[in-house]
Amino acid sequence: MKQVRIGLIGCGGQARHHMVEFSQVPRLNFVAASDVSAKHLAAVVNEYDVQGFNNVETMLDSGLVDAVLIATPHFFHPQYSIAALQRGLHVLTEKPVAVTAKAAREVNDVAAQRPDLVYAAIYQQRSHPKWKRIKQLIDDGEVGKIQRLQWTATNWFRTQAYYDSSPWRATWGGEGGGILVNQCPHNLDMLCWLVGPPKRVHAHVSLGKYHDIEVEDEVVAYLEYPGITTGLYITSTGEAPGTDRLEIIGDRGRLAISSLAPSVIEFDQTEQSVSEFLKSSTEWMTPPPVRRQLFATSPHVGIKTMLNNFVGAILDSEPLIAPASQGIHSVELANAILMSGLKSQPVNIPMDREAFDRLLQELINASGKTL
Image 1 (tube, rainbow, N blue to C red):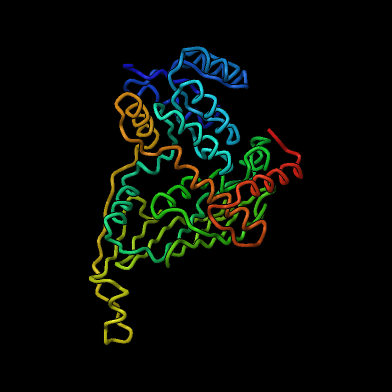
Image 2: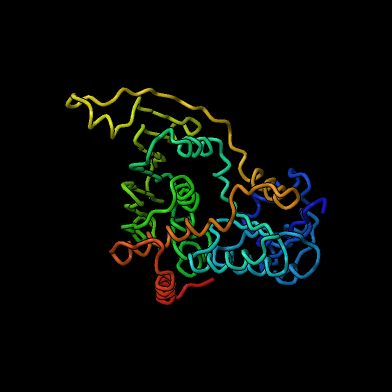
């Protein structure tokens, strides 16, 4: 194979961001598209001169494509991932990989049976130079043992008009949740990628606090990790001006990055271990000396990087930036936060995935709103 013939599943707004990049990716050939909306499909077929299908399975069985990019509403991501993998096609799926951890595990099981196929996710923040540098500093031990982290991510402001733009938005049956499943998958993926998933969460979840919606638009979650590490995650779609600031505190200092200088990493590194210094120092209140470092990172190229990586993985066995099998961690974290908030009790991770599915189904049934 000298090129990858890709078919697009879903031709709505999110897909538009990907289609404009296809022609910029060497060895990627956009040949087909599928959508249940005749209007959306016709627009793509006419603009890009590709073969159109109003049925996904027909496109998958056509022999025209080697791989698919899934850009449908969230609930369909695992269904179409499995359908493509079972037909021997490579898969690149939008985030989240699934609405529930149970569904994510089902796709992972199918993908594990086809190690010859590439199953990737568009968690493009992993390709951003700032996050790669932060992960390197953590993995190299420069920050020391992680003690605490705090992420205030309240810059996800949305108006009521945004939620009113489609009947499936901000509904249990249409999206499976609110800010956790729609705006925050990249944040949650970063948390799991940088420091691993927590072992327990205790959260407060507000349903329709700022908007006329049935799902969550504000979350405050306390995270417990193995050992002494703790975390706090705060997010909202009703706060302005919003804040985006992450602090990671370790035994050798603090990493911080914020929207005020989004390409600059602040690293305040202590000259020695804090835990050792506080035990050995004869001073009462003087902390260990600190050396400040500022790391400026280059601009982010995002989606194009993920597409190039996907093609490289298929044709050259290039390592994936974001294996979709890892997406289960951020999905389960979102599920656990939501369940904890709705049940007003801590939730352990791994969680009872069947129990979450039952809870979500109860919410869908009570709402009566589906796709």
